[in-house]
Every structure is written in C-alpha cells, then in structure tokens.
Length: 489
Ligand code: CS2
Image (cartoon, rainbow, N blue to C red; front, side, top):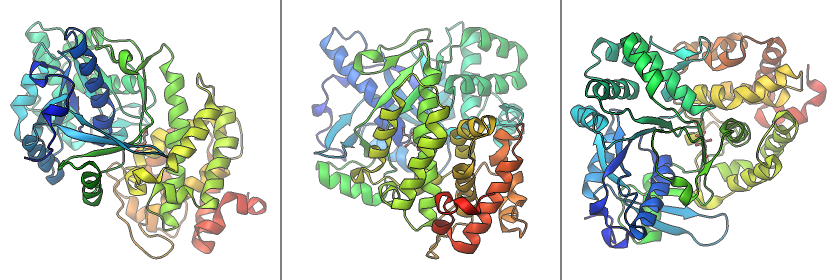
C-alpha cells in the first residue's frame, strides 16, 4: 500500500473523527493550507477531550478529467492521506502526514454521494478553492455569468447538478426542505472579498433557479471573507519522485510548499472550528489584508511570470533572479503599489518577505502554474493596482508593459523560440484571431481588460500598444519600461 508510516504517525485517532466540512476543489493549495490547519486542530482535540473531533473534511472534485479521476484512485489506495513537505528558503525541510481528509468524492461518477454529504446535518461548513476563474463572474455586468454552458445545463436540470454552485444550491435546497440548518460557505480563494464573490455566485445561480430559495439563502447563509497565503507549486511527476526520495514515503499525491503560512478571516460563521488556536487570525478588517496580499504578492507574481516566460525562464526563482525582471517587479512595487495602498499590515516588511519567498529555490515553483487562466488573474490580481494608477493619474508604464507581456505570452512562444502551453479557459473565444491581428490594439477588446473599462483608460491603451510594438521590434528585455523612459508617450 502506498504512503507507509501512515496511521501510526498521526497524533490523533482518525477513527474518532467525523466529517464537518465539505471542500470543493482539492488541489495542492487547500491540502497544504486549510487541511493542514485542520489537522493541527485535530491534534489539539486529541489532547483536550476530543472536543473538535467533528471537524473532519470531505474533499470533492467536480471536474471531469483524467488527472482528477487518478487522484480519486490514488486517494482510495492511501485512505485519503497524503504528505505535506515544507521547504524553507534556508534550512532543512519538514514533512507531515495529513489525515484530516476523511473521504474524497469524484463528483462526475459519484453525484449522489456529494448531495448526501451536502444534506448531512454533520456538515456545517462548505469551503472552496475553485480558482479565481471558478466563480464565473462577468466583470462588466458584475454578476454571475448565467450564459455559461455548464451553468445553463445545471439550471435545466437542477436536481442533478454538475457545477460547484449547482451542487451547493441543491444542497441548501435539500437542507431547507428537511429543516436542517444551512452550512456556512467559506471561500479560500485569492479574490478580493472572496466571501462576497462566493455569495454573488451562489445568489446569482439560486436566483435564476428559484427566487424563494434565493431569498432563504440570502437571509440564512454566512459567507465569511478571508485572506489565505502559502505558495504550493504543482506536484509534477518529477517532483513526486523527488519528494518521495526526500521523505522515504511512497506517496501518490504529495504536496510541497513553502514554510510561510497565513490565514486571516472574518468571524462570520454559524458555527466554526477554533482554527485560531492553530494560527488562524480573526479580524474585522479582512479587506485590508486581502487587498495587501493580492496587490503585492499575486500582482508581482504575475508581473514576473509573463516577462519571465517570454525571456525563456520556467521557474519563479530563476525569473526573479534575472536582474532586469527583479528591477521591473521591485520598481512596480515601490512606485505603483505601495504609495497607493492603505494596509493594516506592515506593507514594506510584507513586500520584502514576498520577494525573498519568491527566491526560494527549494520549492521550484512553476511560472506556467501562475500564468494559467491569465485572463481571470489579470482581472483579479491587477485591477486594484491599475485602477489606483488610473484614478491617481500616476505613471502607467510598468502595468502597461505587464499587460503587453500578457498579450505576448498568449502567442505561446519565448524569445528563444521555445513554445509553452497557453491555457485560457475564460478568455474571449476570438482571442487567437485578435492576438494575430496586425492591428496591435485589436486585443484591447478582450475581456481580460474589462475591469477598468468604466474609467478613462485611453492613455493606458496607448501605452500597451506602444509596448507591444517595442516587444515585437526589440524584444522583451529591451522593451522594459526603465530602459525606455525617453521613448515613453
Ligand atoms: C499564485 C498563487 O496562482 C497564482 O497566480 O500567485 O497561487 C500564489 O502562489 C498564492 O496565492 C500564494 O499564497
């Protein structure tokens, strides 16, 4: 059986743990973050009369795919346990075996099981890591996109859903019908106001399905906002082999992460596990933390990713190790982000910490992981920075260059001629045509640029076109804004 040293290495008796949380989107991040916090709480519980034993997790994946199906089979083989290896920038790694996930449900082949869990009174929280694009928000209309094909299919047959929000709303309907208290919906995605966005998605779907159910959800379900932070790279087959060599385990689904960890949340639950006992921070001002994290960390991640890929890098620490990329990212943080950011955190210390975290070679984080679904990420991670620059009439060159790099990245080829996959499920279907057009401003109509359309963005557009031209004529390195001060508009 894979993953040896299993049960014996847990500090609690797993047979006593019952499910209290259903989690949608079992990727690397939640397994290194929420599931690990929960494991630590179960450890506290074992020492304190088992008072938190009812907070085990059930993982659910709704995506139909080879990888997801394989994950299901793998978890079956190792009783849903897996290892998390944390690698600090300096010093030795540590490995823990995590047992807080009690069951893993592959929704495409286990529809009913998902609904049974959602209607189970023991479940009091439904948590989400379904990615930025997973909330299916139309940025222009600022609402849930009911025109989405999968959403339409669920609305046509709502008792047999296939999407996350279809399942959650059907689960809530069943609970209402059976007079069971609703669960709290806790988003753990990197969004601005992630709880509010989850609420918008759920009410948007529920409203189209049944107005009365929608009103009941609005009046009864809590949607706490939170900020989550830990870099967890994708586990490639090579990384899996490397990790198993390091740990001496035979784990089919290991997780690697940095040692840094943060989780700040609003106390807006019907009932909650006291995760603050194991490091979670409770606050009334989560927006300040989210905004700081997204505008500093995720924004600069994206800035170094597009230019880094184009310059031929594939790893985050290698890209940031390039003096020009470092200068671009540091300039942008110093001159664009920090001066326009109000933060409850020590923003300078956080910025410095972020840059040193990015330089961690031990986690070997992938640029392609960060670039994927760039359309959603540009909207979620760059909007507040771009809007602050537009509103304060500040220098736009770094972000205009970043956006021009995003467009160049969509061509899928670096400066050395090597190609890379471009995965853009949310981008306007005409994007390939627009990118190939000889009219360099044609792609400015893409939905990735929607979030600042209501503002005066003429100058930004002109600069994006200017940098596109420079990139095409001189290459990415020579087009960097600090190398072209005189050439700017
Ligand atoms: C990354 C994040 O996906 C991305 O674009 O920026 O996954 C990042 O690693 C995490 O938010 C760190 O907390």
